[in-house]
Image 1 (tube, rainbow, N blue to C red):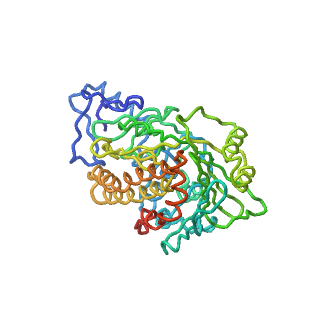
Image 2: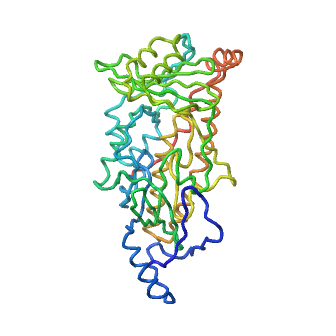
Image 3: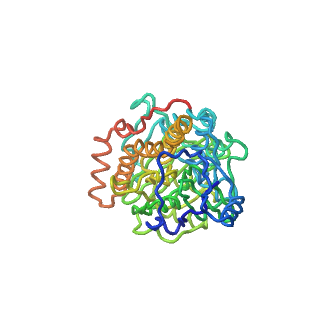
Length: 447
């Protein structure tokens, strides 16, 4: 039976008052039952019993049913651990376009048993072509020439989410479950209160709630930082078959770049990245978004404009690009007690290396293995396992976040002299693809 007091941490106030903090015993097992204090009056004991009847007990709760949340849930499921995924939306948020997965992402998908299901639906990308805004080819690469083991495919976000979710037990995802408050009891267990009034008590909480993560804010993380450019994205649809070779096509201008890549026999993903001093107002009208996107590249290669024209309205989005640099000894840790972050909730990064989703998948399997080993061997070591996860992942995540930012900034140069050097010297004569893809090396054994 739980003791009759806990301290409340509201999402609007990420850190609790010091005077309310109760030290936790590192030797206390997370399965250990807690006895009612004998010195409490009978009326207090009865009130505790009554209050607890409205709280549902869960071992592991994952907040967010995006790529990170579903991959973490499936990784735990493969290792024999049940979890509950809370999703604030009424169904899987399958809107949006596609994302690029390199070989490290595919190794994780193979490890959790869904790689081949997805491969059958998406084209393997053979290489990349870099062009100037007038269509002149500056450089081309073949991925296999640089790394025989490389595997690159653009994957529809909707299909990836549905594939992951379909591998989970029927009731593993609970929709319409938006988080309102977090409470931490004196023994470290976490009370989650939802907007609809539901209350859950979890032994471990995994925050997979995205770039604007309330759980990350509660843990003391700063808001992600806007990097100075925004991106339009869309998915061109060719019901009779798209005409493009399986290559990534990049087009570089001044303060502006674009690209497109075939996803499947009938779909082509495209993006336009442009400089802007502030994110600007949110625009939800797809016809306005399409018009703005086309205006930016109106004199660029015609195939890009054609792909944009053939994009259904519900696939076109515009987002500001943000990241968070996890400075050592300054940024909070990935875990706080029995609360831990995965994916964008912990380390949002710009998409310039195509590693956001790949790193979230890596996080999922690393965390699941450490958590499963801790629970099966000695439950009291759960907090140590979460700290170990953060220590292992940080040296990988931090450099990638910085590198993605630097690459994006270099590709968004506006100075005409600098752009000329980039287009005539750096890209055609200096850049080597192999070293740029070394970060896609990641070993991952099947779960």
